[in-house]
Image 1 (cartoon, rainbow, N blue to C red):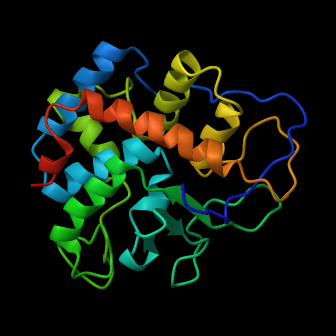
Image 2: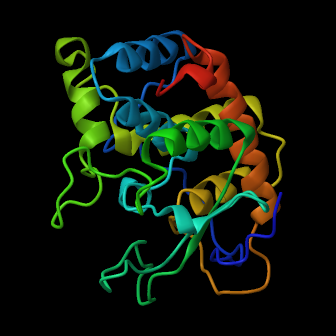
Image 3: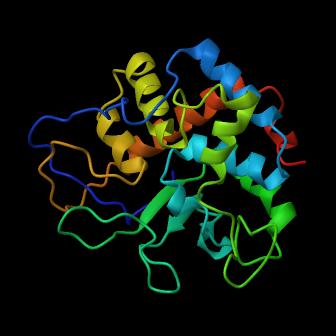
Length: 239
C-alpha cells in the first residue's frame, strides 16, 4: 500500500469518540444511501463534477484538501496522493491540529480512485490543477470548494438538504466500517486520520507509527463498497 509517511500518528491514550453525526448530516442505511448516490450522479453537472463527487465520497477527506489538488502531487507508482500542508501561495491546505502547524496528508490510491483520476486526467491532464476550473481565471484556477455540497442541496429538488452533506461523508464511512468491519484493528482511529482529522478524546504525540496500513485497509474496503453501489461502471464516470 505504498509508503505514506506524512500522516500524523497518535498515542492511544484516553477514549476515542466517534464523529458526531448531528452536525454532519449523513445517510447510514444502505438502500437510501445507494439511492442518494444514484440521484446525485443523475443531477445535471459537468463530467469533472461527477468525478469530484465520487473522489470526495471515496476519500472522505476535507474538500479543501481535494479541490486545489495538482497533478504533481499524485505518485502513480506508489499509489499515493501527497496533499501538502500548504498551498503554493502559503495558505494552509490541510487543517492544523490544536497548537500544531498543518501537516501534509497522504491519501492511498485505491483501484477505484486510480480509475477516477485516470478519467479526470483525460479532462484536465493538461492543466496544473486536477479539478481545474471550468471557467478558467487567475483568481479561480480550480473548482469551488462548495461544488459538492451545492450539488447535494440541489439534487432532486433539494430532498437531501439536511439529510446528507459533503461533510457527512466521513460519518458515512466510519458508520459503515464500524458496522461491517468492527474487527479491523484501530479502524476508528484510521478513519479519522485518513480523513485528515485529529481523533477526538485522544492524547496525541507525533511518533513513528502512522496507522498507514490501517488507513489503506479502510480506504480499500470503503472504495469497493462505494463501487458496488454505483449505477454505472467507474470507467464511465466523467465520460
